[in-house]
Image (cartoon, rainbow, N blue to C red; front, side, top):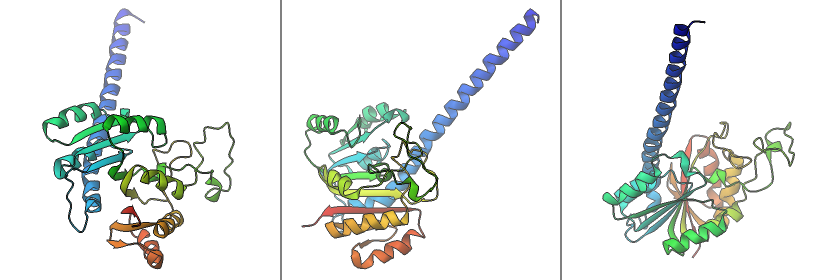
Length: 272
């Protein structure tokens, strides 16, 4: 092969690399744009959960956003002006705008916004964050599209796939952990007064964000189990797609409703 052919081949390879880099950058930008768009749509379905006696007044209120997308805290700050919003996630690196948003939000809102790489289950790190932020208990704990990632129990994958085998030395990517509602909600109420849950309902779809056995959309059976426990131990109010208080007498309404929707929003408070 001559020198000209070598040069042409090198230039072609460089061009291909640049095109691949551009393609990757475009995909990242689309992901960012989708995050901002979806967050705005989701907030419109969540915000009624902020109301008390039909009114939303978040003056001096505080939020903990678990599994934050970094965007909803900004939207909440701009529209409702609470005192402080803290967002935690196990991997904030997927949001390229996180650092800029945290700094530049100070130009538009007096709400203090902070983001931290932290798991709900990392008590030591979370306690340090609360101490640093001088917060003992949040007014609201938002769990948006994250509740199904808080699976901590035994592997229940066999209930969905009889061929599933579980080995301790596996990556457990094919596993599915049980959702332990008692443990999770007790932990959430250690952190805040009102727990707001927003979740997609897509039991037949694969969960792209699933890590090990943590993740996997809830089935109707799991939702009914969750709501049965909550209605027996807490005050539970459905916000979207309908608004009503949930109790043992109307759990059948949840059953039929879940067969017609793809998202659900509700909030939980301690009984007084």
